[in-house]
Image (tube, one colour):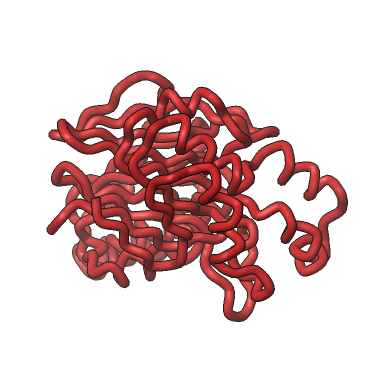
Length: 284
């Protein structure tokens, strides 16, 4: 199969509403590796929608510990196990991810132990290993090398952008971040930069739809996320070949269309621009 990125869930934030897109997750197929990047709600359905058998899971990267990026990590691994997983899975991410996994398997202990005893399955707890991402320390998986840098996403400090590199291709995921000039160097020359994006004129209406936040939510968006315009400027400064807007805030406002996102980005980046939609597959 040709190298590609599939954007499985493309909305920023954990809430879903009737007709909305799903929270953040992606599938990267590069260098002979299939890599899941973030596990927001809906990731298992998104992976199977791309034709991937969940029992083939082997490598997962989590950018940070906001629920829209790892809420379904435990259920994904458990579902993969029920689907026939019998080989090891490495999960890389911020400190604290091990506590999440321990809590998940503790909450599912009755089911896990029953299935081991009654169905003869291997112990899923022995198949999964959790590893802490270390910025600037390369992680090598066959032909694929992965590096990370911290992003600017207050109040969190352990939030990572990831660069996935083979001998001839590179894909960078920004993670959640305010505009970060270090990302321009980190993503330099990449074939594809997948960058979070926010449409500033749509934010007041989004706040009203959410309904249970105050002005602190708006302040969080403005200090911890990147506008579509600035994502395009980052892509141009990095000299990437293509830009995909992901983790869209908002992704499901009917009064704003793809044209609005393009109006904010095309003046600043001359390469190919993909506006994220759930299930979008981008060839590399």
